[in-house]
Every structure is written in C-alpha cells, then in structure tokens.
Image (cartoon, rainbow, N blue to C red; front, side, top):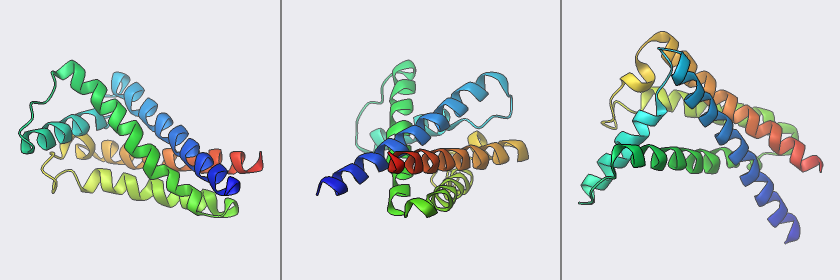
Length: 151
C-alpha cells in the first residue's frame, strides 16, 4: 500500500510540474508573441459557458482570469499525471503521447465545443505553438516522473 501511495504522489507531482511549465509557457509567450496561443481565453470562455448553463453568474474578468489559471493547472496536472500509468522506462513515450494528444485536442476541439477557434487555431504558428507546448508539458511530466521514481 505504501508503494501505491508513493506512486500516486509521484504521478500527481509529475503532472503538476508539467502543467506548471505549460502554463508558464502560455502566460509568458502571450506577453511577447503576437501569434501565441491563448489558453486563458479558452478557459475563460469555458467557465463562462458552463456557469451560464448552470444559471450562475460568472465572476468579473479579473477574477475569471485567476479561476482560469487555477483550472488549467489542476486539469492539466490531473491529465499529465496519467504518465504514472506507464512503467518508468516508457514514461517519456507516454508523456509525449499525452502531450501530443492534448495539443491536437487544444487545436481541434474548441470550435466544435463552441469556444471559438482563434485562441489556438488562428495561424499556422499558433497551431504549432499550441501542439508544441502541450508536448513540452507531457515530456516535462515524464522527465519528472522518471526522476521521482529513481529517488
């Protein structure tokens, strides 16, 4: 049981590290790169849409931004923690697959979900950065998981 708890903690920690790196990439790049993906806008739209469907009033924009950052980190951390399902020797492959799938989803799903396409699909560069940064998040999670498993 102690080994299982340790593995779960290592998986969640790895996911949190990858999610934090991903969010830092998004938030830093949007300050300097015109074509940078805007995951924050997608998150804000998703929160507003969900709250309105539940007949709740979304928070003001400045508060909504922080809700979005928190939601992005938590959801991506949980997603990237799936890297812990792989054997440590396959973690890099698993992290890469998770990151690539998330990136492709971040480009392809917002439109059909009614969140708009511009934030991640505006230009070829935006699409490439979106996929690349989610891939980086997955690879960072895998590297963290591999490192934590060696401890």
